Image (cartoon, rainbow, N blue to C red; front, side):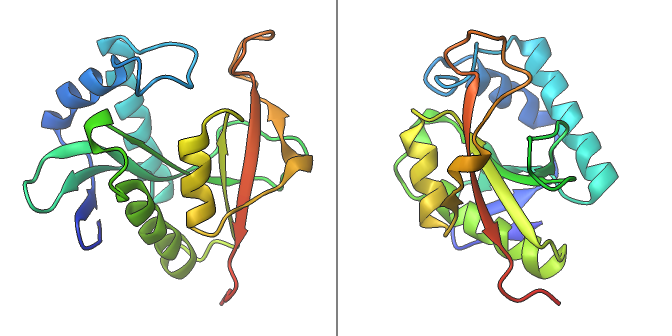
Length: 181
């Protein structure tokens, strides 16, 4: 578990499945993905996230507000399951997805900053990357606020997005551990 002033990043619970499915059915939350998710696909995504934690010891953590205990989405990092051309493998990606009503409050930045510290200090990673579509200005802003830099020569066509799809092209940001042990 990771805590910040306002957030608890923790393992997933059974009661997270319903609000996560509702969040993934929201077209605003899924604006930069090829589609919204069905309840079944949302549940499968949680199971995949949980298996990543079992395998690596870290994942996209379920995220809740400390003040209310309310589930708001996820923030964390995962080992990428596909190779990005010219990027050392295995690469670890930081990411976040919050319900729309929690946008614009600095929560993604707060949680992602804590995840970076965890990744560098606890997991002892040398580098963490982030990806998104070029038009996702909100996520790119979070990447910049947490100190990540855009690496244009590593931008790529996402292998899981169909050819010709407007969201196939992805930008890549990275940050290196300044104090490796």
